[in-house]
Length: 240
Length: 336
Image (tube, rainbow over all chains, first blue to last red; front, side):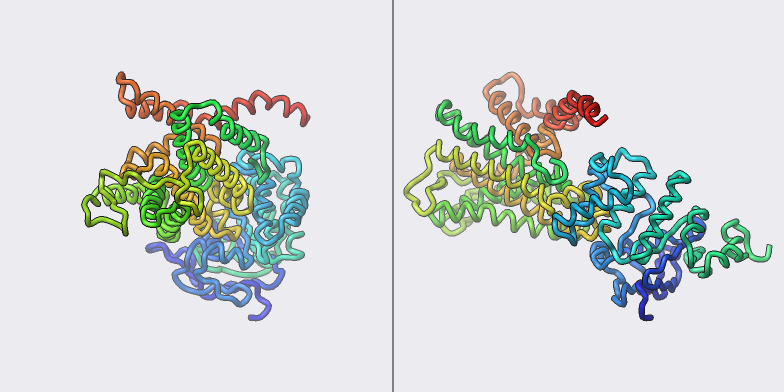
């Protein structure tokens, strides 16, 4: 399919007897913002790990802008232009906020430009005052933003956000939603989130995963009305 | 050093080292000068592990393998060529290449930290046993007899490059070793301030995040390990020169554990720490060696335990913390 940023074909991974991701066919268009929801254990984070090369699929293919990146090394995939904010913020605890942004931006930018990018992102995530403090001492909510900023500083073409609003206060959630919409003007995004308020704020198309497979894919309104989705979330089984 | 900037401490240390290098030969006798020369050579060795372990996060139990390899490479080459320049260069290159090969299998094979320690230690001990068993006339490289556990005596020492007849005298050797120490110290700080160095530190903090940002962790670790191997080789070359002698003891368990003790005592994650740790422990070893009351190794063991339990950060980082605590409140006031 032309114009797709990301496409997976029959993507699967098996851990022993458990198939954590089962034959996922997923397509993300240019500058699309897709929300990925589903109950715990649905395979959302595992899917992200497959997309970033942290896990190797047992079957299926991943195409990024038409290039087959299945089984590539994590750093090679990142170099192609996929950035990820992981579920539990993955940061350099001993380093400063500024150093995070610097490291991310410096890979593709000259030193002078890198400094400018770091300042610009600090402003954008509102952490200028904490720029030179160690990241290890920040609260969970702030760490989320540091990681988000770090991903942004690298300016990847596709951004994966795994629970970006977790551990945030109501105001922070609203600000994060705003930031996500802003990023979406220039970048394609996939967002995994449990906080339905947050999803409602940003979502257009939503993909629901259940037991490793894609259950439905529709607009937010339709998803909210969908009986199967409600059953899956409330733990009921069809017919009962 | 934070965020690639040079701190005043680095400049101060460099100036102090240059001062010592220039001043000491004026005030110390021949014996003291020889002592200080070997101390400085060992400081270079301590720096190699301080870099690999303290910044690269690679716990290498076999830093003495590269040290010994440097010593033997110098010995064999110097005897065969009869001139020290090529021997010195090879004493850096050969251990570096060996480290690169060994590192390739370890890092690209994705070995975990524990196995890394086991393998590097085994490699050192293999060298130890190998060199110990090279006694007899059959074991020679060109004109150089390896001599097994007796070691290789009467090595040609350093000469002025291109003039084998003009050997360096003790004062000149001391200047040279100190110059190498300063170059390695400043060079490593320069490297750490570079893009490469900052990525290396980031890898120590979080490998996965580095990969997710597009940095090849394996390659960076391999380069760190290779550079560390080359520096250890240089130290080995200078050590072999100092006594005009090299024996399998350079590969021994005592040797390799000593380096780790220097770094722990001085402080992990600094470059000044390993130098200080090395100087203190070397001085103690020399002093304790002249008395009969207690076994030196026993005392070393006690010091090592005491540091691990009581001063786990090591001397330099602990002093820095104390210093930071003293000026800390003032800084906070300035901000507010």
